[in-house]
Length: 121
Length: 136
Image (tube, rainbow over all chains, first blue to last red; front, side, top):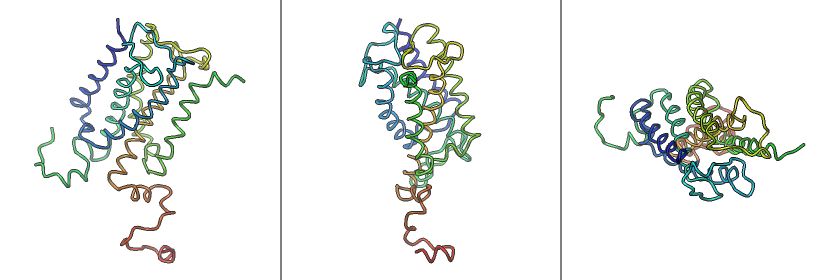
């Protein structure tokens, strides 16, 4: 059974659901979040690569539990889903606690956008 | 001493070191909000360590004895515990740094950061103190 693949998809869905239904930090509407995630995904290549490169592997994945798709330095592709879930949860919880923030786009964007100010859920 | 044993920990330490300038130079202010940081890291840590503990128990992944210290808490290597603190930290520092640059621009962010005093003041900005006036 591809447990790592399954649990990775579940974790991604769970974190997205947690953000939309419970944390409600509004990170998915923020450019800073997507840019930061992209930057982190790039840095994940050498860091994850060092841990998973098969020539001198540090974290050893059971080949039965993941897709078998290895990218860059032999990192299972699932690792990027894992990273997405881990980093999104952290950023969402962090942003939620910002004074006077959550459920609002960035101030600069809010000033420029002419969307009507809807009631906060 | 066998340095190889510390490879995983060294990778984690490098992640901390490389992202540290974000806190000061790009004024991320993550470490300087310890209560908020703790309330962010704790739930994240609990959720992902739970997954890790289960995955290790079920044999989804194991760790090289050569490249880890062998120090463990239950079945989980200390390296993994540091991972679930360090990686979220890197994400938060990146997020705050990117946010500053988007809001204030590169120059504005650098001015707000710890190297700001080395930069010339903003054009058009009113000079405050006598001392500052002398410096302009």
